[in-house]
Length: 120
Image (cartoon, rainbow, N blue to C red; front, top):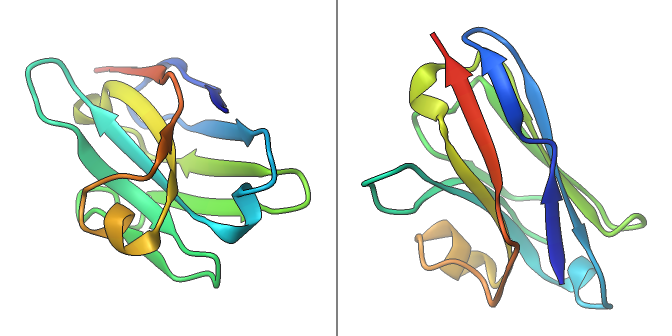
């Protein structure tokens, strides 16, 4: 089970930190991805991190977002800085194979999502 938290309403230029808490024993042996879906748009990869620490970011968030993981706490994070109105979306975390996460197919398990709204 994956549970996201940390979403909310923030002004443009602000920051939020999303968390993804996982239960079970598979967190540390799987890659983690953050995806987002805005109204009327397809779900898209935001960032992914492999077991070994390989990281990928969408071009639109490079330099602004940072993905990390804590295998002791079974928690993943997405630090989002310099937020823009176009970052408004529901953000989901997923756990699974890195190759699937990297190429937009997502993982095997998904959280319920957390809403991020950036006002201009």
